[in-house]
Amino acid sequence: MTKNENVKNQDTLQDPTTQYPQPPFPRQPQDAPGTVHKMQPAPDHGETTYQGSGRLRGRKALITGGDSGIGRAAAIAYAREGADVAISYLPSEETDAQEVIKLIEEAGQKAVALPGDISDESFCQQLVADAVSKLGGLDILVNNAGKQTAIEAIADVTTEQFDATFKTNVYALFWITKAAMPHLKPGASIIVTSSIQAAQPSPNLLDYAQTKACGVAFTQALAQQVAEKGIRVNAVAPGPVWTPLQPSGGQPQDSIEKFGSEVPMKRPGQPAEFGPLYVYLASQESSYSTGAVFAATGGMLMV
Ligand code: NAD
Ligand code: MG
Image (cartoon, rainbow, N blue to C red; front, side, top):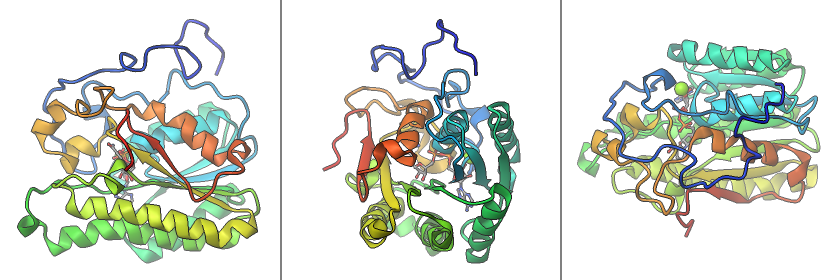
């Protein structure tokens, strides 16, 4: 990407409270897993702004849920930092995914599209095998795909939902990371997308909040296990972020109208605000950090 001094980007000094849209937002129901194209206002994944500087030159990355939201922002940033990138997503998300594939290729990097359902163990194993063979190795694993369905009362949380949420957010994390481990060399980085929900569970996210706490414990345990191999494992804990996960059943629509108003910055985060953090954790710049949880919550406390 050529430098344009008029474009505000991750290097521009600006007031973070007014940097991006604030609520109220229109009600905008869509079916899970959702698409970025039905979101109003449109989310920013850094498409027109993220400027790389070679931080990940020559690396090979697999990002689950790389079609949209936080995963899309990470994919764009990684490619512009010089990494080849494979993205996983559900087959119904092909349109969103192909846009990301195009953006990775426009950055001059190899892009690999790996559709499939990570709630299936054999698919998770195939996913890692395909990513490794098509990229020619693996240095960065971003376990980012997630399922979130808001339900008011425990009586209405079905076993099917509970099971699907845990399969997607917890089991897949285990299956994919286990399959990736033999391919990772010293310097490799594993990143887990957890949530503020790990520390401050919402009453209507009973199953989801538990899975995000699992992600923190997984990160902390595995980081200690593999530190001597030179492999680092860290988690990111986002606050509310403007992604399809939320209007497609992650929140009730009345919460979408005021989404982000509960945090000190009074607005949701945009995926573009996560690209640089995922780059930092993947790169050698964070060489002394492992087993850590990096919060980006608009000011909500991770206590
Ligand atoms: P998103 O909807 O853009 O991304 C989630 C992705 O998960 C989907 O695009 C989909 O490709 C993938 N996915 C879901 N179920 C899958 C399955 N069975 N098989 C394969 N892929 C599947 O939303 P996002 O907010 O960017 O979500 C990314 C991560 O961020 C999730 O782990 C989510 O829990 C976490 N998170 C989001 C928020 C938020 O407010 N948006 C806050 C904290 C944490
Ligand atoms: Mg998606």
